[in-house]
Length: 244
Image 1 (cartoon, rainbow, N blue to C red):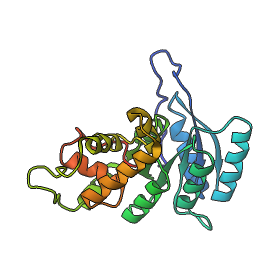
Image 2: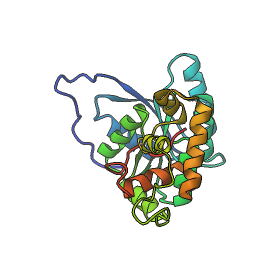
Image 3: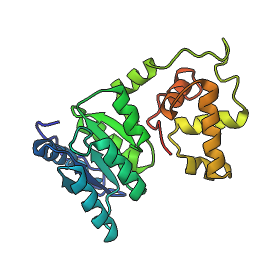
């Protein structure tokens, strides 16, 4: 992600409607500086802090939250020691649920992708992503959606087993309510938001999600969302894939 910095991007008025506060966690200083430089071109994004390790990041994020200055989005490197980014993501999402996390790494590993998403990450990008895609992922996370690098989404899509329910309708075993919830999963809606939208309890939403996965023979919400796309239940590969 290191290179020449493009011209600053602004809306016609030059003033963003809403400023998105970003915190960077990466154990390589040159990467942190590169990300800062790239994000500086976007008028609606501001880097408000950084850390070189997960424990330092957690300490700083707690302090920022206590003073009412928590960031909106954390960009999290996954390959760190002694505490890796997946563990740090899980801790941040547990302690500071209003702070979204976008995983950013040089590794395209399916198990690592699924672990990061299961920990609560709101996206997954590789480090050579264009600055515009990084901004898209940050904005999606801020909206409560999820964005995956295209290569990662394709790899996850290819890993899905062939639909086995029926020849014509892979979702034939799902009830109308479960189909409705599957569409919301594919939009990246968390259980809490699904419950609010459908006027049901979060526990009931969680039960529906578990039943959907069991009936489809899948193990994750990410797989369910991608299957919905592959079988044209939703119109396009969703930016938002696994939450809640």
